[in-house]
Length: 380
Image (cartoon, rainbow, N blue to C red):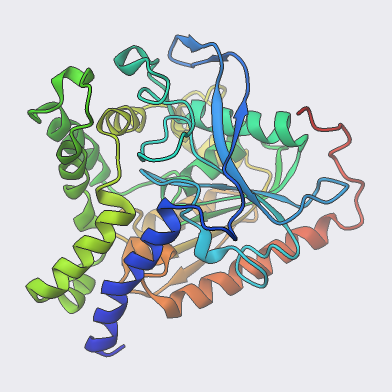
């Protein structure tokens, strides 16, 4: 790609994502809210009425066996896959039904969303959640609202991919396949630095006030994210695309509107503390043995990862894939690194989309002759 074209994508694509990530346009599906009753947290505490916000794309068939759950990652929301969803795209709405929730503890400001410290009004009295709580909340949405007891697939990018793996360990019969994209059980060593850095930035910020602020101190959340952003792209990407102040400013404005500048600080603090708890390695029943947990997965797995990923390095993904029966991987070569999943490299997006589309078709084909497992009507 030429330098000029690379700069075009660096400047324009984040802005395109900003428009689809923060607003509902007339042709987009309506924002919906599920009320799922009392929810008990693994680390203690409960809330009387769990709320999960979501949108859906496509149509759930009569057998309810074409549903795919899309789990967003760190600091995201239900719009992050919009560019990949639609007729003939990676997530093909002509064939499948896509459930796109905002995770428990959703961090982005804006429309009413899933239960979190801020949206619930509980502030710092909100129970501390972990990753399994996040998975269980979305599992409850899938089963109680849609009556789907076996998904065609669970997919997610970045930590959304990690959640998909946890889902497959926690509920091995609840899906036919999983698609972790630049995510998984084994992150790079820098993950031990990034989370504490973000927490310390928030806690030392003048507007934090112990988390009991009235007005969101936006700069606290922005700065907490900025310490992580350097790992999102490879060093080559930064050097080739943002080598002038003007190029950096265009990127900063677009990515700010999409991600960096739209976070609630308190909810981001809760999210960061959750990432140290409830991962695959300490799933109950495996005695702390992450290898045994991964070996228990019964879903077919397609991992999509990137040679230049700074957050989930390729050697970590390769080791993980080797532990899951029948799992396979597609390794992309892209200086976009970890951000390849949101079209930071359009050529890689084409390759990734083709692989996802083929894998979902394979999963659907494997179930075509089997009786649908979703025999109970949905509870609405």
